Length: 638
Image (tube, rainbow, N blue to C red):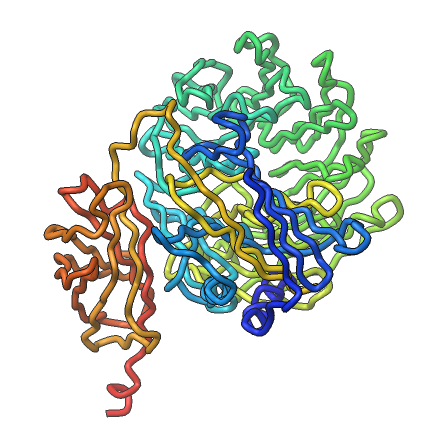
């Protein structure tokens, strides 16, 4: 189990047993607060990123930076390399929190389930799986390791092909080639906020280093090239014809130029980003299929599938400087993190070619599993995915100047090619913990967690009947931005009073800081109300085949009469991945409590969505509840 997950689970066992009698708390009139306990002083502050509003005023809907400065209370020495955890949760009107309520709130957040969710979680990370089906799985590994439950499921207009996260992780872009769109997803609320027209058959995506433009490859025969989308306006900035694709896209380190491969034409188009126009077309060889840029050497590398050469192009003069001879069948070229070596995967020769970037010479040819098609890196290893094998090959990076050390581990029971799911996006990605990776195996319909040094994965995450063809990691945890300062940037929620619950496991510190958010007077008043759903059923297991009374509290946020009775609260319950569903209207019981009865037909994960015509609220506008139905042991014994 990963260290981060282990710490959270250990904390759940200990959080109820401590609040020091020496704890001291002071709340200055601004947004800075200090709490001291067991010799540790935590200074909490929060401020709007844009500096809008009055001093100390936090405006709803704006970005804010949260900081926890942790020091030794006696010496003032910064405490570094800690793993603090924090949550932001709305406080009920008129409620005054105390130490006991704070402990109970944190305890509920640490439980491996969904009965209590904070407004914003500042700790764990999410695993995103781009599925063969028209959706994206969002998995919270802290909520259930080894039998993970989905946090939410994002429906798309059609199956996604490629995706990319913005550098601040707030927006996720997904190409939808069958409907000629790029979906834009807000990761704070896990909602598709727009579907942008992106030319004919948009496939590969590339986001500039400065995030200004999103580049989309178009695989149309007549209009083959790229569509450039301005991310600030979510509108098309340019449509550029290059050559006949398929296309791969990359950029110079300073985003001054974009490079686009034209596989059928055997060329690379050089596009001036400032002009958004082609300035040069470079013949590179037969079937250029992959491209990578080394920021250290300022050199572009192009792998040619047809003639088996790796072409080096000067990133300033746009001229070929070297041709590295390999063999036909090259599939992917990548540069390792230190920019010392390049790697090219050959899917027909079952080999990886490693070349020296300083000399542009081939150094090693490494045999790997059958039909290798992807490669990705941690700081210590290169990971090679072979479509024809369940094993993942690992190449140690430290010894490449002399020799090659190769090991492998099983990432499932079946070879990935056992599924028809295909994507050029990464199926192997580094986990937030150092020396760990996540591996998608679409044939197994599973995601595996592997830690370096182990003979096999430490655990796995279910994808509940879906074929995961690519993975991304969205890390929400606090980051040490300065010595002893742990920070995160969040979008502030609706106006109201909030607890910022803080937990430090070692040394142990627990506290709930105060945060008040006010409406932004410069923004139009919100016309869409928000429905907060709190499950009220008991912790007893839900059994397939038995009647289940789903009871919950619904609170309308954003109106004066928050608990006014809703007569049209519709409920949609479906069994993942959508093979059974039940619709009905919840019965109001008074006091904002509602219920609906249904019978889960079989074991599995059920999603519960809500809608209300009177609130102009649709099913996809609120995060779903999740219910796990287990096998009916009584029926099995009869």
